Length: 125
Image 1 (cartoon, helix red, strand yellow):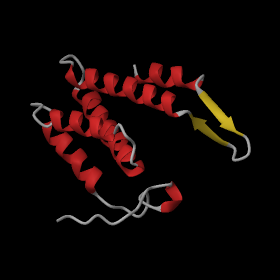
Image 2 (cartoon, one colour):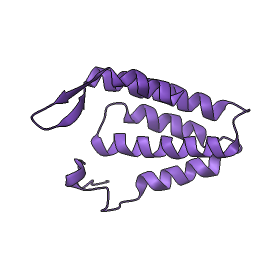
Image 3 (tube, one colour):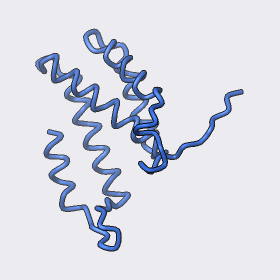
């Protein structure tokens, strides 16, 4: 199903030939994210999905959530809420907890300005 959501997106990608980088319009990205969120959630919720596929889905979910957080995307809160909701899942709860560990981990390999991340200090009171 995720493949169909990505396939649908292909027609919505425009290319900025000055930078030779594909550009996804904001409303198209929001639509794609909504489709992916629905697909990933359904995959995790189904009982007939093999455990390895469900585990891989949680891993993808975690990485996508991390990417949204790192970019400060407005849908990040929705993805975090869904991930928090999955913590109580009988089979995948521990995998989801590992996903939060991945989200919170700071690694200079991917958390840097070269990857267009919003890197800033956070002060907790």
